[in-house]
Image 1 (cartoon, helix red, strand yellow):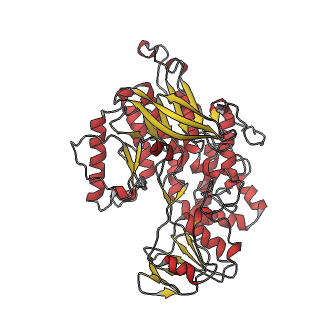
Image 2 (image 1 turned 90 degrees about the horizontal axis):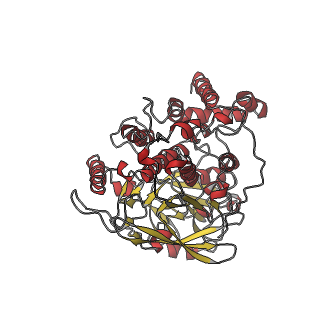
Image 3 (image 1 turned 90 degrees about the vertical axis):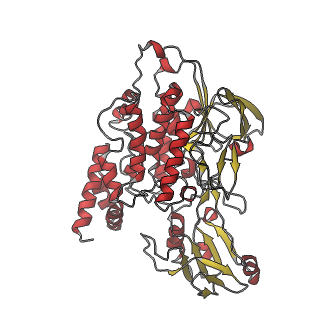
Length: 533
């Protein structure tokens, strides 16, 4: 197994104040006193992390921030099947060839739909002059810079696939037997680890719905196709054609934006019939698809269109963890909707219905009865959140629980908490097994559930004495305001970019620290509001 790591050939840059970045995490995030006799002798542990995207890097960095005296002899290894850090932000050098799933859904014109400064790991801003809504190259570089700055390279094993992970042991003790494949040589080996952290992301395996009659429609005219947006890269192949895009979230919206200028006509099929935000190009809005005929696509309102050449599915992704399923640790049951009630025992294994992995405590710790609750943890499952700060909050809870497993409630209590949460969702009209890991406000208010989630994780650690209680929420006020005002920020930044390079530099010149980035966003928001928009 190779340990050498070669990061992208981009020179590491010097932040003017980078020596202060990370201080909060490194110097105050772990309230473990070096002189505490109860923590001087911890048995050695081996921890495998799978995935070098934002979640995996957060987990690795946070574990390495633990004081040396509480992790003596700990082995921490991160396995990544690709050639570098960055996860979905690392481009695939090969063109997609359906049905083979590409390494990433990334396409050349991808830009973030969230203000970049709010996406950062705490106290580690983007490079100077990074646009507020940057292209994917900036996000890729950010992850490389993070790994370089915090010297994570010795722990990263690239071009390494985890084929399976099987628990060998019982509910109290054991280890993960992990099958590892070196993608460069094809050689396989087995490793044993005490703990496994799955940080492999959830934007890889496309959800592809089917409709009655679609095969007849595909055969009705040469050249017709139905493809998922994971295979889409640009709109050029649809020049002069009529295209139906299904789904109005990020990928569906971007397909419309980049295909409409060259296509003959673009339709957008939406379940609720409401056009998505930030859709600056015209398209014909249609309801959900009912079925296909040999000549037409029929919608749920009875209308039909007969001129469609291609259907592009912006229908999201399935939640799969293949290496866990291969090791019988994660069952796949697409129609599973648990009816377990309070008091029922924990299941032997986890299940995914392809939207929701359960049972998990706080979307993190497996509550399967086959192994201890800290044996298997997930980072990065939550949806509708800023990944990097959320990943750090999750990683902090994992790190402290690995040091002291008694920090967590009992498996039974955590299972009861989960079932009460699921019951509360249902009482409010939401199906937790359909919503999955989406962080939503089921009370119907204006709260940001993702911020509350992160705050709750850190508050728990403070309440248990694992972190110093500074009286402050984990999510800073500037992140809250900027995310809440993201639409105003988007409009303002669109205007700035339309005015050219000099105007962009005028806004961003000299901006380096978190406070300075927060100030720029505040000024952009106020500027936009003065425009009367």
